Image (tube, rainbow, N blue to C red; front, side, top):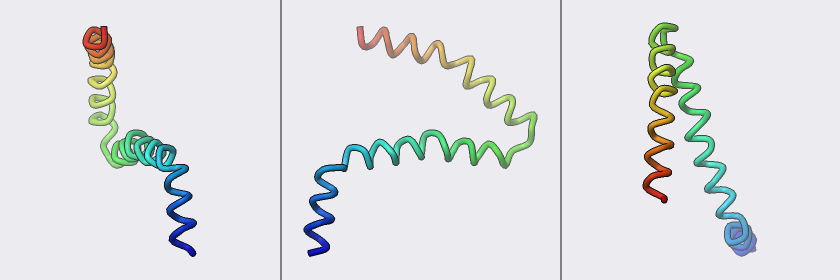
Length: 65
């Protein structure tokens, strides 16, 4: 009985479970990792990432269009 309920739950909610896991891995784990670094290294990594963001967005839009 438990497995039938679990299967029904999984069939109805697999997408939202997947999105939640991707969100956790994409946002929480990098913040946790950066928290253990020195301040100068953390600022360098965040700066490089933010500078590369417009190029990444532009490349993605160019590919989609």
